Length: 186
Image 1 (spheres, helix red, strand yellow):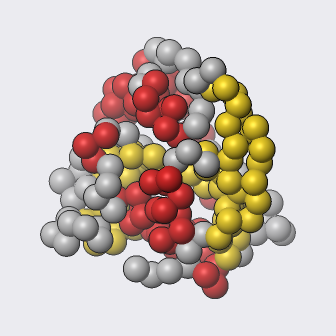
Image 2 (spheres, one colour):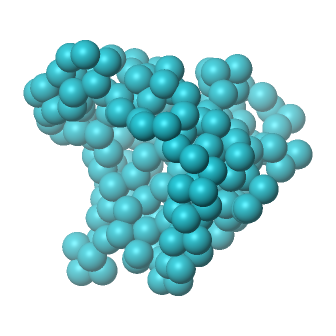
């Protein structure tokens, strides 16, 4: 699956979702080991060896059916890896899935890449796979991500109080949802 859309803040750049490639694994390992990235996302990450990333990649390749969930690379028009976007396995009858994404390097954030990637992923899931709803959770402290998701059309559906423990304390998370009819095109 490849989805291309023009980045909102960089009009001459195209952001696309593409398959994760073996050459992407060192960058993924670096991001998976970045404590600042995971603190912002609202998660704990343990140090990850390249061998663990390669095992994850091999398991990713074994998924052959779209309903099993997928992880895509977020790339710019030069093919440079910017981050990842994923959706979880879903029940074909219920037609909803959990999604998530991140932009790996700090200097690539705040350019609209996340919103474009989220919109491309949502379009694929709604239009190609026939899903009706997407959901996600996001740390209440991650205002940048909340703004990104709201820009795409996600609504706040609930508060998960003291949902995760990281960085020495419990943190609240928002539960957000997006129906197929609510996706904002720009």
